Image: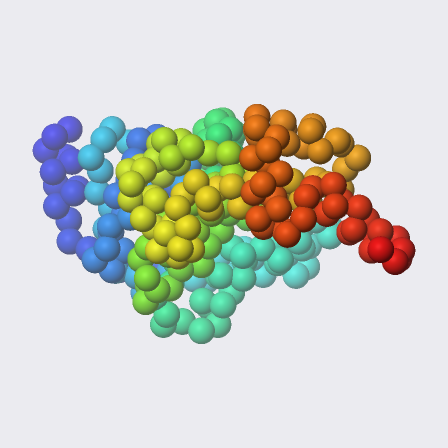
Length: 292
C-alpha cells in the first residue's frame, strides 16, 4: 500500500479530455488545482472541466469516487431534460451544475471548476447509502442487456442529488480568482446553514483548516473577526423570524442560543438601529400598509 500511495502521489499534474467529478467518501483529499492545494474533507466534491491542470494526493486513509464524463456523453444526458416527461425532471436546468456544464460546452477554454460543499452533517450518510453508486459500478463491471439505461438512470439520480440546493452549495470558481475566496465562500455557506452558530473549533473540524487561519480569511473579506461575522448571520435570522413567525422575542433569542437578553438586544440594535420589538412593529405595519 505504501508503494502504491507513493506512486500515486508522485504523479505529475495532468489534464483530461473529459470532465472529471470527484467525491470524497472518507478521509481527506488534497486537490492540487493549477499549482495550488485545496483541502477536500469527507462529503465535499469537485467537478473540473477539460482545461484544469490538476492532481490528487492523499495523506490519510481515504475513499474517493471518481467519474469521468466525455463532453458528448454529459451533453446528451443533460439535453435529455428538454424532452423530459415531467416538470420535475426539467427543473435540473435551473441548477448551477447544469448551467456550469452547458456554459463550458458552449464557451470552452476557461480554467473553471465547480465546488460542492454539503449543507448538513447527514449528507455523507445519505450518499454512502445511495444504492445508485453500487448499481452504477455493478452495471459497468457486469454489463447485461439494459446496462446502458441503468448507468444513465443511476448517473441522473446522482446528478439530481448533487444539484439539489438542499444537499449542496455549488460555487463556480475561476482559477484566476483569489484562492482564498473559495474558502471564504465555504465558511459563509456553513455559517448560513447554522444561523451563525458554529464555533471556531467546529469550522476548523469541518473545513480542515486551523481556527486562526479561518479567522484571518474572514477578516480579509469582511473586516470583521469570525465571532462578529457569525453573529451577523444569527441577527439576520432573528430579523427574519420576527417577521415570518409569531414567536416571542424571547423564544427567537433562545432558539438562536442567545442566553443574555441584553446582549441580544444590543447587537440587534447595532445592526438595525432599533430594538427587535420596534423592528417587528414597524415592518409588519409597513406590510399591512399602515402609517407608523
